[in-house]
Length: 384
Image (tube, rainbow, N blue to C red; front, side):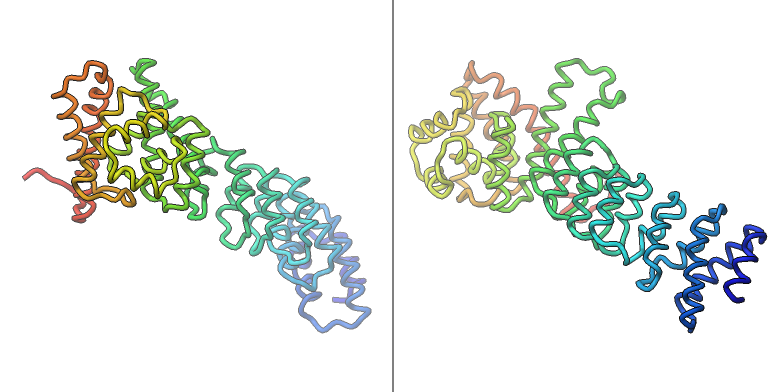
């Protein structure tokens, strides 16, 4: 069909056949051997079809031209400015757009347009940063799902800052192996807070119980992250915890009762301004008076000193060098040892410490049981 005849035909043809013809014309433009005049006429026809009142006609153009590097650039850009249903294929697939154009579409386009761009086979750091800055939640989730996107740390941080309370985006962020430990802590803490705010969780809880739930959730998040962190990550994590007000006596008691000596050492190093290597030597060899001075320098309350001194004494007994964490079985023994010693000494001023250890001993026993099940690959426990 020559172009003149085609243009006359589309003026009166029904929508369905017109859409099929538009797709055929687009394929012919890309793949057929056309003379200069024929290609010029086909380009005119494609351009006129941009204004066709039928969405299916314009969509047929978009779907057939989207992947080609040879498609007429002005037609592709015209389709990109159409309604979402037409624009999505070209925004998602067309190789014609520059990063600058894509950034503009992110800033000016609809949510569906942003999602389409986030799903492109390749995304530069610049386009990813634009999505992180102004993209809707669904677009940022799509970006995080795109394994071919280049996403720098600052963009991930911006997404976390904007959508820390958005469950879907938060889940995508937490699934990333490259997520900074500080961001991971913040997101897990927001998750814990959202659980605390759940009416089913709050039902029947006093205000004090809610505060305890929040504090314990925060501590458990920190301990979980610290247990998996390497030395570099811990060195970055601990100052952040201090600045955010999370380094306290309760957390450090939990750490030693869980056998997390590395966290304990890094925390004391930061709080007491003592280099970690020197601190490890001190913990292994120093007398109680020196250790008490170290605890005072770190700002830990006097009523908790005895618990920490007993911990260090027991750690030395099992030849811990404070560069590795204790096994959970050793941690349970340590907790029971602390509880027994402090109760026997009947330290009146340490009642809150004893009460904490009494409650926490149950948690440590549970952790040991879970570790046993995991290590022995036990999938379920059934009564005999």
